[in-house]
Amino acid sequence: TMWRESGMILQTEWSPGVNNEFLLPFDSAMFDLIITNESPYREAMVYGLVLTTGETWKGADGANMRDLSFSVINVGGLSSFGSMTPLDSINSVNSDGDLIHTVMTLRVDKGAFADKYTDIGVQLVSECEWSMSGPAGWMYRDPISSTAYLGDIKWQRECPPVQWDETTMNRYLNYKVHKESWPTLNYTVLNPNPVNLWSKDEGTQEGKYDHLVHKNVEFVRIQWRKLYEGEWINAWNDDKSDADVQCNTARGQGCKLLWNIENQYFMNGLRDGTWEIRAKVFCSGYDSFATSDVKYSTTEDNLNLIVDVNRPLAVDASVLNDVFKVDFSESLKCPQLSPSQMPYQIRRVKTCDGSHIDSNVGSFSTEAVINTFNFVCMNGDGKGSLVAKFPGNVAEGSYELTVNPYLYKAKTSAEREKLLTDENGNPVATAKYTATFGCKGSDASSTKGVTLASRLGLSRNDDKYKKPKMKEIKKLVNAKLSESVNTFTTVKTTTLWFGLCATVLVTAGVVFAATSPSGRIEGDKRSSMMHFFRRRQCHLSDASSREEDALLDNTSINAERAFDGLVPETYGSVI
Figure 1 (spheres, helix red, strand yellow):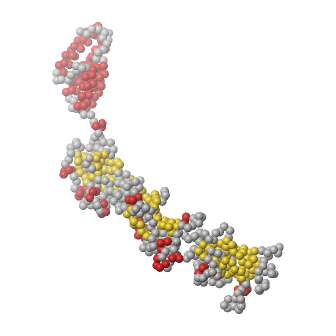
Figure 2: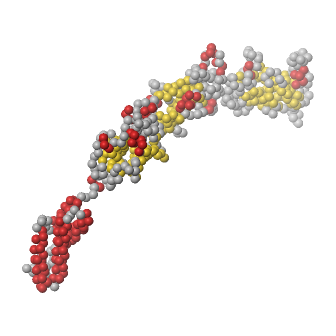
Figure 3: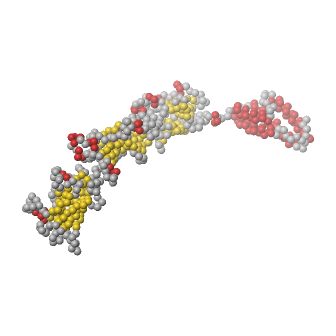
């Protein structure tokens, strides 16, 4: 066989398009195995492939191939401990008798414990002699073979992962911050991968696991942004610099960041809304074609930070029957009523005629408020309403509803739970809302504190909405009459003067009728004037009646028209 199987040649090359020294973590190293059969008889031969270690390797046997997977496409796997993979019928020449090469692809898949491998070779051996060699064989020499080495194989190491610890997930997965919240958040991150450690783990436990350390972990950041939009922004340290959370206990108790969100302006009311929080590991030393999921790693689950530090604002108020409703700009959360700290106070402040009621008389006791009034929070479309149901037999008049009167005393979380708040815990500002029941022109309004007042809707108490009084109507009518008859007066002797004027007018009418063709017409006009003066006298004697007031309004208009024709055209002489 030495003569017949001589001339076997094995060569290796990188497969086209593959750089086996800068491989991505999940890519395979690819080599072309080029076999040449230069048998003197130019006949097909049966060979085999065996993995081998280079002479420069000084480590444990097989350690340079630990956890690697080798396979020849369309042939099968190769073992790192002396097993042969047979190659049947490797041709020497083609049909024209020309020498040819046989090419096949070797695939090498990465293991979990290292990223760089050296001194790995492949042997092409005589299948016949290989089977006769070995410990149980009788060959006095090594089988005929040809060896080629693969060179260095290097994978770009995947950036180590990061995740939140259990306590952080349970507490901050959907964390709400309101005005009274403590501004410091305590986040803890871990490295869940035991064979891909952060750089600061190097040297721990006497360097026992240094071979598992990723030496190019630059820093670990906690970042935030508006939910689903915008650029990620790094969380700050207390000195307002970007915080690096990396530590050497990422595989144990974790690495902590006490993040004061007040330093990044979350508590000033300008960043109300939902924000997402993630942790990210940054690594370096990669090929320019390395993808982002290789150069970085982020937490699989992002935390939600729901910021709402602004108090809900009252925007409207209304009364329907015995129900008083105050609308707010945010959804509300009604508290459990407690006699020790009532969120509502109610008192009757005025009667329908505007008379004020002493606070000692008009105030309802805590027990009365709890037992006779009902309070409900109604929410929808991000807005809320406080609905107060008054008892059906409530006395007519104006009532004052005070919301959160003990806000200034609420210092602890237990005390704040007894306040009317929005859904995120911001208490409604202490304010007084006024509603009127059973009175004409009733409306709802709001007063806050002692000096500040704001109306919710139009108020009938404004001057431009007042109903004119009877004295003003009388004054208006008299003014109109005075414009046309300057000598007209309304004294108690009016009856005497009207009788005298009537006599003169009748006499003049008779004479004028005899001398003027239009005397009949003018006489009719004067007769109408006499009728007007008599009615005017009656109205002045009884102006307190509501129906006569309405009639008087019409009379003022007719009076104007009557006096417009008081001096008619004259067709004769009046004696």
